[in-house]
Length: 287
Ligand code: PDD
Image (cartoon, rainbow, N blue to C red; front, side, top):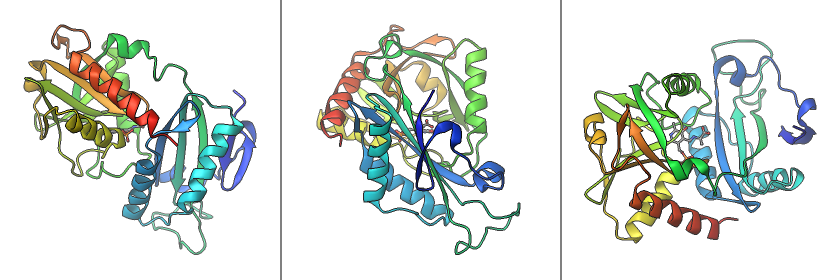
């Protein structure tokens, strides 16, 4: 690929972009990220992603290096320079690169955050063959740390979880804590039973998905009942429908959990309706 990427104020060909080996993102996973979807060259849920970025940085005591207007310019510049029509803008902010490795945080006056951002093209986000079929998930123990509400770049366990899923013939994994589903490896998890949408309530146990918040709002507006509470694996196995949400998948039907078919084993009608509403409304509001 020959993308133009962003590193600390510069737009560069991806092959020329460099970050120090002492960067704390690289050595300590001391950084946060956001993924914002682009459809028809426009940013979806941009304000939500920026608000969460700001919160994640605040929780880790990393200074937010840019104002909202600058973040927006940077996103738009990457879309324009890469002629991105459909895909994502990935953005990462780390605590920066001090001149040596140390567990102690560097002095923020001397070490400024590192900002890296790049585009990823994906023409199959809206018209998604996967969404037509639905995905299969397996359940795995949730072995992540206790601050999953912060969108950090510590993605080793989610990455291992996806590999476990793929090795067992599934597409993704749902993580389970004390018998209850927390979330997917890179998405929020939902079931629908008797017309009620159930998803875990917000806490430090899960990422506060930007797509989750929009989808629940649209569901309530469409008079679909929503229950924000934990659900067990057993409850999920007997649900009528299941799905996941994330910026990169929107509303994605789940048709199998641990080898058990959910509903008819095809994307459920309410899930499909929610996907349509989310895509229509969020594209309308895209900037
Ligand atoms: N993942 N939960 C986890 C653990 C996630 O990593 C994500 C997003 C979500 C959904 O959040 P949102 O709706 O704001 O995208 C929930 C992104 C897409 C990723 O890591 O690529």
